[in-house]
Image 1 (tube, rainbow, N blue to C red):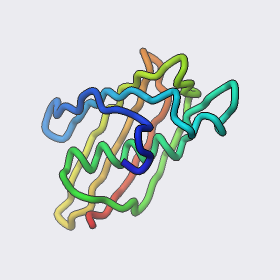
Image 2 (image 1 turned 135 degrees about the vertical axis):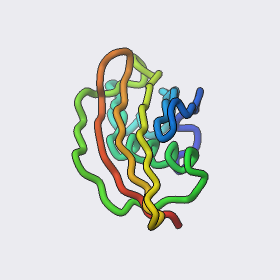
Image 3 (image 1 turned 90 degrees about the vertical axis):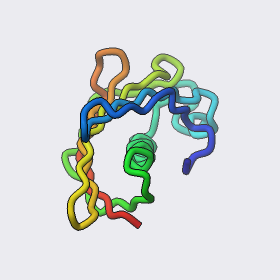
Image 4 (image 1 turned 30 degrees about the vertical axis):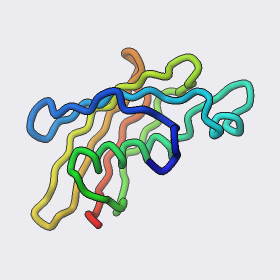
Amino acid sequence: MLLKDFYKINSLENTDGQRYVASIRLNKDHEVFSGHFPGNPVTPGVCMMQIIKELTQEAVNASLTMKSASNIKFMALINPEVNPELKLELDITVADDGTVKVKNTSYFDETVVLKLSCIYNKN
């Protein structure tokens, strides 16, 4: 985990072949939120992207480096004091050349907060 204690994985389940569903809990007391932003904490988008990478690494059991990202859409702010519980759906495809393609949709409750597509290289 790049940011120690930033979040906790409650579950990461393979639901159907290449589809995974993760449940995580953000640590509202993490130091990141004291600077982003005091009195009105918002989860940084780059931190969400790192969480997706780390969950993908867990799913494919390999260290990854991002090759490219596209269709990154942040659709709602994530305040860890209000919505610390997130659900992340990952559609993971490992190509013959070893690249790992991920399509993600992240939610709190029924609200979509992030959609993105990434391609990673295995290290």
